[in-house]
Length: 329
Image (cartoon, rainbow, N blue to C red; front, side, top):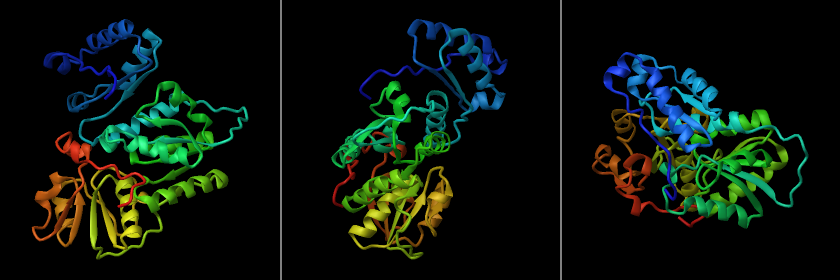
């Protein structure tokens, strides 16, 4: 939110879209790119180009050949959540810009990338700054933050990291790519609460040595009749559940209302992305932590704790979004 973003709509008419006039679209992109000279170009689809079968990857190849600017084509449909698109974007950046660094580089401090930082997940309430500060206080050198506050050069330098910290599911594609192709292991967990933040730090130090990936919240106590249910993004919700269970000695389960990998959820936790499904999952919940817009589908006799999330309710409750990073709950 601190600098201009070059985001444009195609501007083609309904008839041009239906008749597949790709050339006008291509010419407009090339003209704009030559005027503004961006570091890369990304083409993303919506429902109409999905219905008419627009080949974004082919268009991206044409644009790149003409402009010599790295160009991505994403077959997004407008029918999934922001998590799906961010996942694809970070993964594509990894594949395109990260090249193996065969030179042995030594550093006094452990080096880390933060993956999965989006303003829809962490808003502008200093959560990312607090995460960076936490890492620095524990002798980590933060190479890059994907993708709040880091330049493309910072992103390219990610190859020099010893370990990655994945703080939301959108960063998992990049984490897997870096592990499989660059031998950089990762830790999964958002450092909510004091105790869990300390565990995340311990896991980062351990994983740097073992080179074996780790999910920091995977040993949370499980109870099918949990006292608290959290609805939200999978990694953030699981991390908060762990923090609550440790600091407040409460049993917690999670409903992921966004796309995720089931392996990142603990036993008994669920994926439910539609209101009817979420409502059924919540019917016996005693205490519910979720974005305020979920309140109408919660049982009337439940204790509802509001935890606004910009990806769900936008800017409506932005002033009420707490920064829970490394803070006592």
